Picture (cartoon, rainbow, N blue to C red):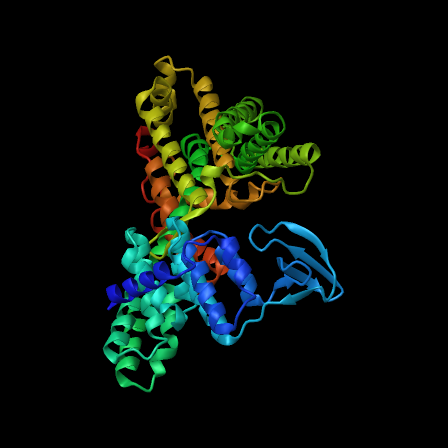
Length: 532
């Protein structure tokens, strides 16, 4: 049946007397004859396959196509009665003002409008560009029109692209439901729409559950139930993805703190401001690139990342050498001192950049999104997860495979014995604090892509970072990794039921109860000093 319809459609198109005529010549024929003759001209225009034909037919359907009385020229006329403007219907070129009553509209009736809609549909469905054909197929699915069934079937027979063919099959199915096709064909069409799934399929089938025909109503109800089950499953998968996304942010924010707090035992209340410094470093780099080398904008984050690490790491070393090293073993004084440093850094940034938010742009490769099943994944979140895992892996390699990492682990396990073995513990402390601060700067680079860059940026993450470190086990990086993603996923599953604020409160209560049973977290740090 589809093959016969396609052959008939193509034969009519190619056998048409005006097929070989240009679009300009066919446009000139539109004012002539009656409505039936005008329909034939419309079909001939569609048969040309000219890219300009769809716009011409749209203008005709709107009643904006006029013929100038003086010379018979065809114009696209817009505006009010006393302020009319003419344009070329094929190119859109402005032809200047049009005198009132100097033109006459080319009239259309309902039958002609249906023919025009079918012609426009066939033009778009047969377009050489598969992207345009896909758009036309989706448009036909979302706005089914029984008059387009013949054009859809003809396009489906000729289609070579499998994705476009699938979209056309779905558009054909939803269009069949608008016709008086045999019952078996309509039931089969419902099955095709059900297989498509998604919100569009639900909207297409919603009205048929109350159909007067029992077979149609049952088939529609079963298809809708299947779609809703699938959507519920993908909603859970989407929550997991959101949790992983939040977990990657928590990991970046907390892994630096896991070093300074977990390894060194220093409560660094300025950790959030070190994250902020990384974000502002990204802003400065992007501003410089925008004004001096805009062609390098897509590389801005790759340029900003090492600079943010050095800036935040340098500030971290300065904090350790200037303040923290005099307060080891005095946690309350350390907390107050680093809190004071956080206030100083916030005010310094306000003085330099102002209190308002600063815009940090997304490179082209981090913009947009892609679909996985019925789940939408944004590129910036996807790359932040990869970045967080890469930073974590790099940190593990540094701790396991370098001399500094070996010295850091030695000082952590037994500071006195490490000093007796010739390790300069003061130097290791400074470098360890600087490393944790530098990673906080890298977190700022990532957070600049999903959050507002402002002097208060770090305050949003400092409490969550401490929760992650305490829950995972102070000093254990794998514990931080597990805790960040666990809390991230748990938070996203609680939010739909409890809300964002109450969800965080429930997480906090859980951690308080958890550390009553396991004071050293999920994966406690081991060593002679710890065990002693």
